Length: 135
Ligand code: HEC
Image 1 (cartoon, rainbow, N blue to C red):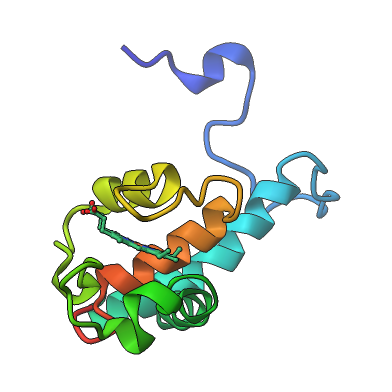
Image 2: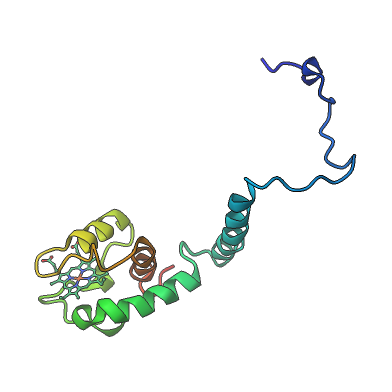
C-alpha cells in the first residue's frame, strides 16, 4: 500500500515547474553525465539494428590489427589450420571470447595484462560482429 503523500506534509503533486529554480545537487551530476554520454550511442545502435556501436567496431578493428592480426591475419583472414579462424567464432559466445583471450588457449598467450576491459570490449565488438558485417 502506498501512503498518501500529504501524510508527511509534502505537496500532493511534484512542484518541478513551480517555485524558483534550485541549483542542481552535486552528487547525482556525475552519473547523469555518464548517462547522457551513453544514451545517444545506444540509440544509434538501435537505429541501425546492430548489437554494437559502429565506433566500437572501428576501435576494435584498430586494436585487432595492433595485437591480434599477426596470428589471426589481417581482417581475420587466415587459413584456420593452426590458428583459429575468427570469422567462424560463434557470435553469441562473448563469455568464451573473453575467457580465451584473457586466459590464453593452446598456443595463444594470455592477454590478461596486455588489454584493458575497454580494449577487450571493443575487440569483441569487432569479432562478435564479424568486422561489422553481421551486426
Ligand atoms: C601468438 C599468436 C596469437 C595471437 C597474438 C592471438 N591469438 Fe588468438 N589464437 C591463437 C591460436 C593458436 C588459437 C587456437 C587456440 C587453440 O584452440 O588451441 C587462438 C584462438 C583464439 C580464439 C578462439 C578461442 C576459443 O575459445 O576457441 C579467440 C577468440 C582468439 N584467439 C582471439 C584473439 C584475440 C582477440 C587476439 C588479440 C588480442 C588474439 N587472439 C591474439 C593465436 C594467437
